[in-house]
Structure formats: C-alpha cells, structure tokens
Length: 402
Length: 89
Image 1 (cartoon, rainbow over the protein chains, first blue to last red):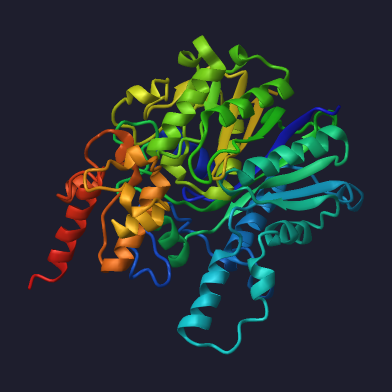
Image 2 (image 1 turned 90 degrees about the vertical axis):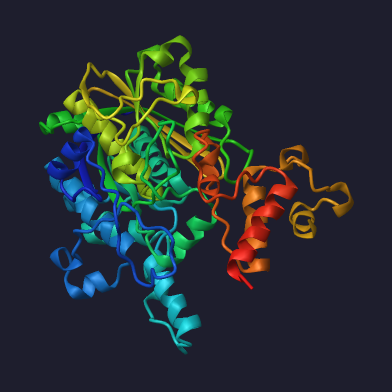
C-alpha cells in the first residue's frame, strides 16, 4: 500500500482565500461570523453567518467560464487551483490521466436553485435559464475542477451532508493508497447562504442568533458558513523525490452510520468511526495529540461528541487537546470537513493547536481540554479530524507529522 | 391538543393538559414539528431554539416570557398568549 501525503492546500473561506489569511485567523481565533448579505433576505430572522464576502468571480474566471458555474463550483475551482499551485506540482498530460478529483458538497448549487425557483414560482417565469441543471447538480464542482485542471482520472462527488468534505478526502486517500490514482485533488465546497436554505435551517431551530460557541455552556446553536477547501494528495515517495513540502501524512480513514436518527447524533456511531480511523491508521488512542472536533455548538452535538471522545480515549480524553474551527469559520456543511482537515494539516505542520474561539464558560457535559480562545504550541505527532453528519453519517481522518 | 395528537400520531384521548411531552416519548424533532404546525394553524411565530436544552435557562422561549414548553398546557398557554398579542381586540 502506498503512503499518502498532503502537499498542497487551497481554501476559499470566510476569513480569506489564501493560507496567509486563513491560518492566522484560526490561530488568533478571529471569527468571521457577522452580518451577511443575500438576495431576498427580508423575511429571514437570522442575522448572522460566516460569509465569504471578498469573493469576486471576475478575478478568477473569464465571463464565459464563470457563467457556467454556481457559486459553490466557483469556490471549488478556485480552491483546487490554489492547492495545485501550493504543491508546486506540474500536472503533465501523463500525470493527469491518473489524477483523481473528489469534491464533496451537501447541497450543491443552492444559489442557482433559489434564483430559478424564485423566477418560476414568484415571478411566474415561463422558462428557466438553460444552464440551470449544469449549475445546480451537486457533482458540478467535481466536473468543473476536473475540466479546469484537465484531470482525467477517477472523479466523483460525495454528498453526505456535513461530512461530505471528509468523505471526499477519505475516499481520495484510499484511491492514492491503493494505487488507483497517483495524485488526488480532494475536498469540499458549499455555498448554502440563500434565503431559501437559511429559512429551512431556521425551521430546524438550531441556528444561533448570538454566535458559534462550541463546547461552551453558553452555546446557542450553529451558525451557517460557506466556502471550499481542496487538498492535493500525493503518493509519498513521489512527493519526496520531487522535494515537495509535505504538510502531513494521512494515516487512516474511518466511516460509520449511526442507523439511529435523521438529525440527532448517536455517540456510539461517532465513537465507532474514530476507532475505525485509528485502526486504519494502525495507531492507538493514546497516540493522538490533537482532535479537530465536529464541534457545531448545538446543545446536542457537543454533548454527544464529548461522550464519544470519552468512550474512545478513556483516561487519555482529558489529556488530548480538542478544538472546533466552526467558531471562526461557521458551519460550511459539505465544505466544513475539508476546511477542518486543512486546519488539521496546518496544525501538524506548524505544531500549533488553533483554539476554540468564542468560548465563554466550561460546560460540565463537555469536560474536555477544548483549548479555549488561545492557541498553543504543542508537540503534535498524530491528529484526528471529525465530521458527524445529519442522518448519522460519520467520517474521521487521522494524520501525522510528515 | 388535536394538533399535537395529529403530529405525534397519538390518539387524542391519551393526552391531557398536564401531559409532559417527554412522557409521550417526544424527541426534539417532534417538538419542532409540533411548533411548526401550531405556527401554521394560528399564524403566529413561536420563539424556540432547540439549543435551549444546553441548560443555561436562557433560551429564547424563556427570554420571551413564554416559559417552558414541556407540557401540553404550557404549550397551550404560550400559543394563546401569542394569539392574544396578535389581535389585542
């Protein structure tokens, strides 16, 4: 089996579209959550989100190419280009044949859908734009990334709600590890901030009107975000041979289903996914130094995730640093797992644990070291990134120092 | 009570004003569906955030003076106070 390393990272995030903006915001706990602007927002009660406010498609796309894509696919392409550039790799025609593209998204082209249905039902339009379908399909991001970069190996989309980005990276890891692909461009993209989507989330009664405070006793729910992160995965020997900078090595991937409830999470399913990832990585719970938690800041998730972490790590649970990036980035649904794996890889590379921002007071139900508000230098050999999606679809990645 | 019975698929004769939803096996998603149905029926907006369960006692419903929404009569009282507010006549 091949060993698989991360040699490139690209992000489109609410805290910026370069790693130079992204990483310091996470380390300093500078939250991107604030007022947002979307069309037809008059009847929303939600006033906050983590929006990618500095994204001008004209900077990245010729008008004709940009018009073919929904916002979520534009995010994916920009992040994928950045990941390849960051890796320093030139993808030759030959290499392109064995390069995989796996891009997750929970909800695909929501802007396209919201605009189309508004025209259809509210403005009584008699026809929709001919590109409606190609823009809104959830797999469009994978297609557009493959087209933009000329990648001709295995390509598909994972759509597992809030774990889609993690499933995408996990499956891409398996493709490179097994030799089915020499390289993979993998991540997640989401642009879910539309009036319709936010209204639907409001109806679930889980959105915070305050801010996202993971693991804090005063947490009041999740805050929607958006963005994309794409990683360049490479077979390790090949990466070392070309002198690539290696952020981290992916050691293992675990996935499970709760088979329990369509919204509530089951600690047992989460714990089994973490154990599966550790088994795949051939590591013991005691080897883990840092966990990037799913940490949505809903009452239910944070309690349930704590229970799962305690079940897996036992006595070590108190020693392991656990932080959630969602206080800074919001919950980017299908992009979240990819953004958080980018954070995890950077944490390993920089030997720095980013904090859980917006933290106010400890919750006895979440009695972990959640690294409140202040980053810390640490010896990180092995780290884990958790994603536990609605409907009980769990995905966990384990990575180590290169 | 009729709406709660319909949403929960529980015969109305098994419900009484003092019945606690928890005793009926109501999970958070069920309560959210009940609230939605009541809002639609009475054209009101019930402030409720599922994260109130975090235990701070500072959830939206309490902040808005509606009190807890744990039993059928508590829900009925909240609904009638919101309906009254809507039409002060």
